Image (cartoon, rainbow, N blue to C red; front, top):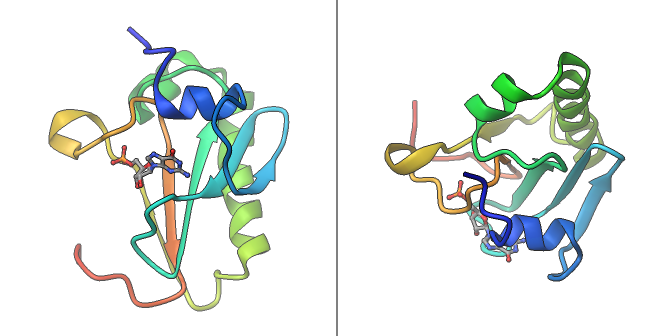
Length: 116
Ligand code: 5GP
């Protein structure tokens, strides 16, 4: 079950501040509090869902499309398309997910190590 008290739910309710990059009626993008790269932005749908799979399974196509179009809009806004970036979404225990509200990490600004 979705935990209404997870940190991103609190950010969406404006109980906790965030450094906003972009917002529309369906999604919110803000800087990660503990950046793992020169640019580290998190994108979340405003809809309560725990993971990528839950987002895909319970959200209508219009909203899924809107969210991922917003990811590209933020990529444009950050001007990172040419030099490149990495999109990550962690899910569940094996995926190392800490905050149980579906989110996309946008990492850029330098060469990102790790996965090949
Ligand atoms: P996960 O491991 O769940 O994929 O990533 C959660 C991310 O949320 C981490 O990168 C962590 O630094 C970030 N985070 C945790 N708490 C906060 C917060 O209160 N504000 C912001 N902006 N980011 C947070």
